[in-house]
Amino acid sequence: MRTNTPAGRRAPDHPAVDVAALLDEGWRPVPLRQFVLKIRSRCNLACDYCIIYEHADQTWRRQPHAMAPGTLRQTARRIAEHAARHGLQRVRIVLHGGEPLLAGPEGVAHLARTVRDIVGEAGAEADFTVQTNGTLLSGRMLDVLAEHRIRVGVSLDGDRDAHDAHRRTAAGRGSYDRVMAGLRRLSGEHPDLYAGLLCTIDAASDPVAVYESLLPTRPPVIDFLLPHAHWGAPPQGPPGAYGRWLAAVFDRWAQAPRKETSVRMLDELLHTLLGGRSRLDWVGITRTVSVFVEADGAIHQNDTLRTGHDGASASGLDVFRNSFDDVLLHPGFAARQAGERALAGACLRCPELSVCGGGEFGHRYRPGAGYRWPTVYCTDLLLLIRHMRGRLPRPVEQTR
Ligand code: SF4
Image 1 (cartoon, helix red, strand yellow):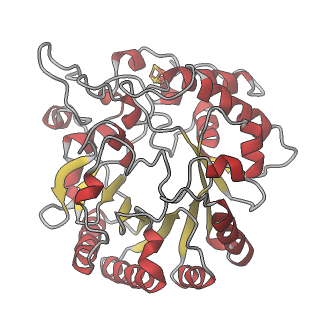
Image 2 (cartoon, rainbow, N blue to C red):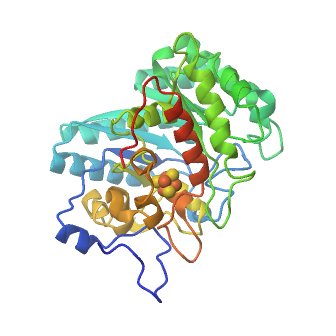
């Protein structure tokens, strides 16, 4: 297996595998199914941990504010081409930013129509989600989202104090009240559109209080996110703080008399602990089927890489010159589909590898030494996985 960086050669500053060697070994990529479109590159909030604006990568500065109509059509044509070539009947389109709803109701409607029409000509259905900061969910916007069957995921970090500690405007005003007003409209008038909440963990907060503060709008799913970090910029707090935080949420969530909501990370870890396959990129050994398209049509790997260095998520490919089949053979994308072949030696020897999978790629980065390392959250994930394993009703053997 050609996985280690040869002595004396600098490790790549992007995730990478030797694609020719993988193909020789019989590896074949699987088609992309999720297309994250950065339809706006700017935001009306200035959250202090934002992966786009507040980390090492600053490529947003070189992006147009909005995806131009021609770029959108070309992106849709590439998606249609990929769907036709691989016989995909459904593709997932995630409208992202910046803040995607800055496009306004008419802009969102035009965009959904354009992509659906072009992808539909290839015989595929486009399922839409928008990931928003929740401040622009007016009645008119929600009507348009409903008309175009666009489901809505919202970022909310807990109660007012927890949320406004990080998610503020450039002038320093909290966004909690506007987000909650939008969430009440969404969950009250369009519950079928409500895709869930995204909550970035602050390990100094009370985990049970944060979890309970997210429940009143009845989110179908909560995604808890580990703050973006890597070995050169480790997370705040002592090792294990995030694992203990999540373990406390797990106990509260699992002991509820009835299921209150899904917690995606915990659901996937449980599923994987019981021998199933994870559907999350960074739980278990999975094959990523997601790709990002920037406002100018550049194809990027994943926002989580942006914490490493400027240009870390870029691929050098774009929708004007490249097909999404080109993407599948890019060394960075291939690394995300290469499974154990892209992992660190420490992970390959780890008894919890089949459950953990080595963690999110961006969190594996070590400046000057590349991505072939365990996640910087290794201690946290081990702690959480062992905590959950210890609470399963019958002993489940480690699979390695
Ligand atoms: S727990 Fe740590 S060593 Fe084990 S697979 Fe995950 S990141 Fe690798």
